[in-house]
Image (cartoon, rainbow, N blue to C red; front, top):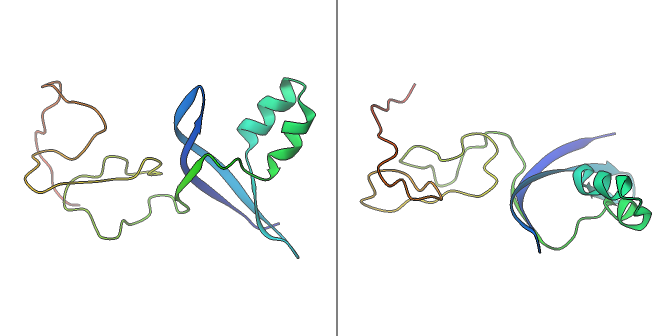
Length: 118
Protein backbone atom coordinates (compact mmCIF):
# COMPACT_ATOMS: atom_id res chain seq x y z
CA UNK A 1 0.00 0.00 0.00
CA UNK A 2 1.58 3.33 -1.01
CA UNK A 3 2.20 5.63 1.94
CA UNK A 4 4.00 8.88 2.57
CA UNK A 5 5.01 11.08 5.47
CA UNK A 6 3.81 14.63 6.08
CA UNK A 7 4.68 17.19 8.73
CA UNK A 8 3.47 20.57 9.84
CA UNK A 9 1.76 22.21 12.77
CA UNK A 10 -1.01 20.78 14.92
CA UNK A 11 -3.17 22.94 17.17
CA UNK A 12 -5.56 21.96 19.93
CA UNK A 13 -6.58 23.63 23.21
CA UNK A 14 -3.53 22.22 25.02
CA UNK A 15 -0.87 22.19 22.29
CA UNK A 16 0.55 24.17 19.38
CA UNK A 17 3.61 22.79 17.70
CA UNK A 18 5.29 20.58 15.16
CA UNK A 19 3.75 17.20 14.45
CA UNK A 20 4.09 14.38 11.90
CA UNK A 21 1.37 12.20 10.40
CA UNK A 22 1.02 9.88 7.42
CA UNK A 23 -0.97 9.50 4.25
CA UNK A 24 -1.84 6.26 2.52
CA UNK A 25 -3.31 5.63 -0.91
CA UNK A 26 -6.59 3.71 -1.19
CA UNK A 27 -7.85 2.79 -4.67
CA UNK A 28 -11.05 4.70 -5.40
CA UNK A 29 -10.46 7.15 -2.55
CA UNK A 30 -7.03 8.61 -3.29
CA UNK A 31 -4.67 9.84 -0.60
CA UNK A 32 -6.13 9.58 2.90
CA UNK A 33 -4.67 10.68 6.23
CA UNK A 34 -3.84 8.77 9.37
CA UNK A 35 -2.41 10.08 12.60
CA UNK A 36 -1.03 7.23 14.64
CA UNK A 37 -0.17 9.49 17.59
CA UNK A 38 -3.64 10.95 18.02
CA UNK A 39 -5.42 7.73 17.03
CA UNK A 40 -3.19 5.60 19.24
CA UNK A 41 -3.71 7.80 22.28
CA UNK A 42 -7.48 7.66 21.69
CA UNK A 43 -7.26 3.86 21.53
CA UNK A 44 -5.32 3.71 24.80
CA UNK A 45 -7.92 6.02 26.40
CA UNK A 46 -10.74 3.74 25.24
CA UNK A 47 -12.20 6.32 22.84
CA UNK A 48 -13.07 4.08 19.89
CA UNK A 49 -14.85 6.83 17.91
CA UNK A 50 -11.79 9.13 18.02
CA UNK A 51 -9.49 6.18 17.30
CA UNK A 52 -11.46 5.33 14.14
CA UNK A 53 -11.62 8.99 13.06
CA UNK A 54 -7.83 9.31 12.85
CA UNK A 55 -7.61 6.41 10.42
CA UNK A 56 -8.61 8.10 7.15
CA UNK A 57 -9.13 11.63 8.51
CA UNK A 58 -7.38 14.54 10.15
CA UNK A 59 -8.87 17.26 12.26
CA UNK A 60 -9.02 20.70 10.58
CA UNK A 61 -6.48 22.21 12.98
CA UNK A 62 -3.43 21.26 10.89
CA UNK A 63 -1.10 23.19 8.67
CA UNK A 64 0.81 20.93 6.33
CA UNK A 65 4.33 22.27 5.81
CA UNK A 66 6.30 19.44 4.27
CA UNK A 67 5.90 16.18 2.44
CA UNK A 68 9.56 15.55 1.70
CA UNK A 69 12.26 15.11 4.34
CA UNK A 70 14.97 17.77 3.95
CA UNK A 71 13.05 19.36 1.08
CA UNK A 72 14.68 22.28 -0.70
CA UNK A 73 12.99 25.57 0.09
CA UNK A 74 11.61 27.74 -2.71
CA UNK A 75 12.82 30.41 -2.83
CA UNK A 76 16.10 29.13 -1.47
CA UNK A 77 17.25 30.59 1.84
CA UNK A 78 20.36 32.76 1.94
CA UNK A 79 20.99 32.08 5.64
CA UNK A 80 21.28 28.86 7.64
CA UNK A 81 18.10 26.86 7.83
CA UNK A 82 16.49 26.80 11.25
CA UNK A 83 15.13 23.30 10.78
CA UNK A 84 17.20 21.42 8.18
CA UNK A 85 15.24 18.18 8.60
CA UNK A 86 11.44 18.16 8.52
CA UNK A 87 10.62 21.91 8.53
CA UNK A 88 7.43 21.59 10.57
CA UNK A 89 7.21 25.27 11.47
CA UNK A 90 8.30 26.88 8.23
CA UNK A 91 11.21 29.24 7.68
CA UNK A 92 11.58 32.97 7.30
CA UNK A 93 14.41 35.43 6.95
CA UNK A 94 14.72 39.17 6.67
CA UNK A 95 17.12 41.62 5.13
CA UNK A 96 19.89 42.72 7.46
CA UNK A 97 19.43 39.95 10.02
CA UNK A 98 22.73 38.69 11.39
CA UNK A 99 21.31 35.29 12.35
CA UNK A 100 18.42 33.32 10.88
CA UNK A 101 15.00 33.40 12.52
CA UNK A 102 15.06 30.80 15.29
CA UNK A 103 11.60 31.17 16.89
CA UNK A 104 13.29 32.33 20.10
CA UNK A 105 15.27 35.32 21.29
CA UNK A 106 18.92 34.38 21.30
CA UNK A 107 19.76 36.91 24.01
CA UNK A 108 23.48 36.29 23.62
CA UNK A 109 23.28 32.57 24.40
CA UNK A 110 24.63 31.56 20.99
CA UNK A 111 27.39 32.76 18.73
CA UNK A 112 28.03 31.68 15.15
CA UNK A 113 31.68 30.72 14.95
CA UNK A 114 31.77 29.90 11.27
CA UNK A 115 29.56 28.79 8.44
CA UNK A 116 30.53 27.30 5.13
CA UNK A 117 28.57 25.59 2.40
CA UNK A 118 29.70 21.97 1.93
